[in-house]
Image: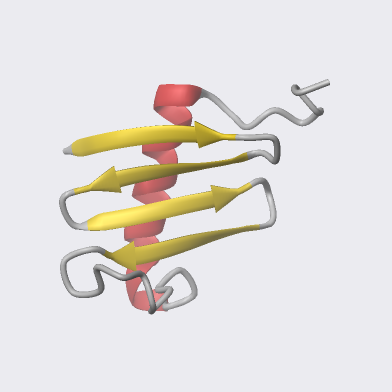
Length: 77
């Protein structure tokens, strides 16, 4: 279950937070993935851990389904 989806500016990045995971997407460059139950202070980024690829993909799909793709141009000008 998705608890929260947020979009921040002016740089294109956004976040999805569930009861177990926090995923932050920074444009097309990278994502951060944290286990909020085991790592509530977000010290261990699991985005590059192959064991968590499916989780990151699922959360990215949730973001895109809810918010659409990130803008490719500067929407703050």
